[in-house]
Image (cartoon, rainbow, N blue to C red; front, side, top):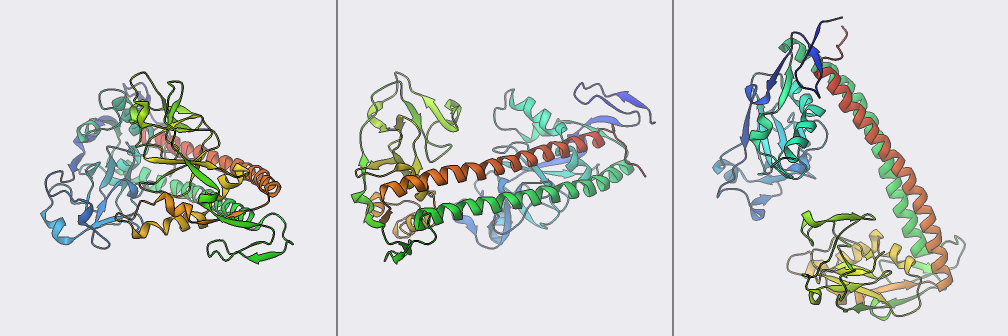
Length: 434
């Protein structure tokens, strides 16, 4: 049993007697990206070139440089940038947004970082060991402490440079890193398998919804060609009609301080983030006497809502009485329908793809016109069948969501175990056995 000593830091506890407490700034350098006039704008990004790292590249312990999630700049732009020029073994750390997330670079031989990130370059410490330090509660505890202080939801490189960590002899750093590489690889493989199961369940859920809202629940029903490309064949008893003959827009304005300002299609961006409070899964803020209600649109429970600007897919179904930003269009049925049926229909990928097809002709490729929805043919099953489909999908989706929630909880539990395991070894409470 090796000799231990008090670290002097309550949340770290005891450490081996030959290890020491230090600060990261003594074993690594911190290099910000270029934040001056040469900082790349959206028009400077290209499909291929030198990687321009963002928070999208940080998930897991190793930097993900996959082209599907990466941004790139030209060689000319890269050559005039100051600041961070990444190297193998550097740790890329998020200072804003996903604060505290980090990953070691084992892939990119050249590149730079967005202004929300900092490049941490180990100089007097084994890179993988420092990465594991920053993957542990040693990082998260201190990040939370700074964020609860004066830094709000962001940090500076100087904050992170002042973080405490436990420094064993270099030979021990290498041994611990190799051991954790092996253990974390096993854990990550388990997590990856569960994540694949979740993705399969999500895909199954989407297929169940699409099949039900376009083909009905009776597999033996007589079908006919709807004549509508995105719908294909539908039950012979179903009708189709343009959206403008089923729904109309609601243009009422808010008139009560008891209403809540809701953002049905976006979690952030409509209301200042610091005013949000969580209300049944929606982000909302209660209105006060200073609110100009003439600018807000009324939305009733059972209405549908869409952001015409920066369309992100699908229409939202309101569970609340409230008001929304004028950037949204609110609409409701004017014929007899079972509203839950259209709640599900409007979330299918085939419907979203149809709506997205209208964005190509507009200037920024993001917006759609409500008239395009109005001129889109929609299925109209018999009302009783709409209810049957809704009841079936509500039940089936709840069943699938419950399984998905259990698997996500499994991942959270395993992730916590992984962090705990790392903490135990980088603080020396557990020793790698030869």
